[in-house]
Length: 428
Image (cartoon, rainbow, N blue to C red; front, side, top):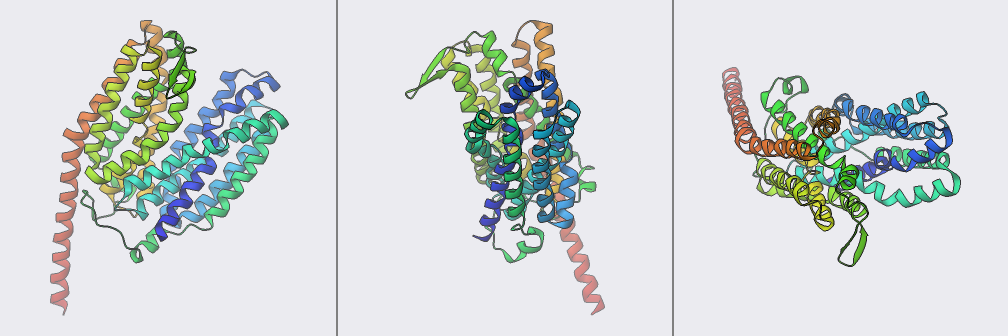
């Protein structure tokens, strides 16, 4: 039960920082109304946040592996709070952008630490643990979206930034004090046996970047993340072009406009998919689950394009797209830790997580493709192809590569143990 308590602390910390990403949209219009800045200019702050939150995770992961999770989450919580307080006073775009960078560094520190900790505490259930932790990142916005909206309406967006920034920052910092270093404690904690392919050796980040199997995982992560983002980031324009955005859709007695329904399903399924597919991968294997999920994503993207002109089909296929896409945030970190060991799991998973930033840079390509072709067909085709290639790579490339890599590492370890035993016997 001890490690489950540590996992729960990580999930709550993730929920505390979720609004920095998922709640941002609530502030865009009020900021534009007050200062007259264009929405495009304001949204640059969000891009800065995502890039700093993503690209600095390897550095923050290194600090976690070296100094433990407590100081990193403590600092991350402080930066998240400071960033939102700065937003409440930002009277220039420069200050808004700087605040976004501060928040991004803080959020990345908390995110990378909590996912890395989950991987270390649960070597026998990495998929489920990483999935539950990643799901917490979305759950936080669901719990606080209404209070933030109410405060913006009653007291202004500045008050919402200020008070929620201080509250969420302090809560994260207090929780950080309860975090323990799994590298020091795990030897005394019993874990369940697992039949998954796992390395017996811990690889440092400098070793990992020289291994081809890491770059295969990185490429697959980029393809699936970009493919999903290209289909989902443009959801509103797609619904508008399909002329079904405001058409009512009724499912199980609930009636909403098609686009609103689709976006509501996004929040729910994008959270559920992470622990679900993580749990499945713990049972049947990482690559098998990847092949299954990425194939569903391929079919769903094609179905959304060919049948999405029907409002009900649009909502259902959108749900499938999100369900088969969000699991990358549990599958890839757990696969990385299985392959390269637990000791440096935060650093190594952090390096792999930068694939999210790389993928986000490819998303504008979808707008270019639509402009050049005059149709969404090319965008959906490219997105589907990337997922299909990733599914095939999971089974025919990553699976044999990982098996060979782990077997070679195991054989090398056994040879070294034999040499050490002979040396000890000779000395005796």
